[in-house]
Amino acid sequence: MMGWNNGHLNVGWGVVMLIGMLAFWVLIAVLVARGVQARRPFAQLGATHGEPTSGAKRILAERLARGEIEPQDYQARLAALTQPG
Image (spheres, rainbow, N blue to C red):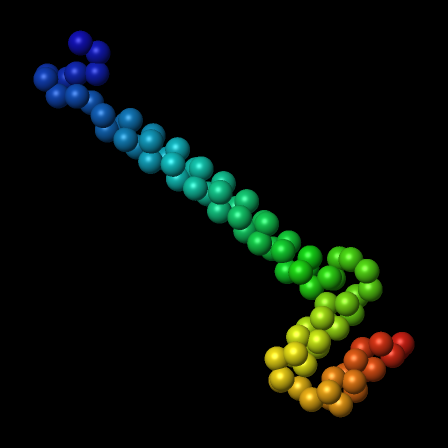
């Protein structure tokens, strides 16, 4: 009977191939997830859309909303962001 050797089933290479195949697909999934994750921060901060400081303005507004900075400090920092040069 095929696959039997003296009454014992030869499954050693089948298990090795199964583990190798699973490891391959896990590696592919991890690489895809890392690629998606690497692109995400730029889209969230607005670095790829519109003006380059839009992400910085959003963060500055969030800090003001959380009470981390005072309104006068917000205005000064916003002016520094929008000044050319």
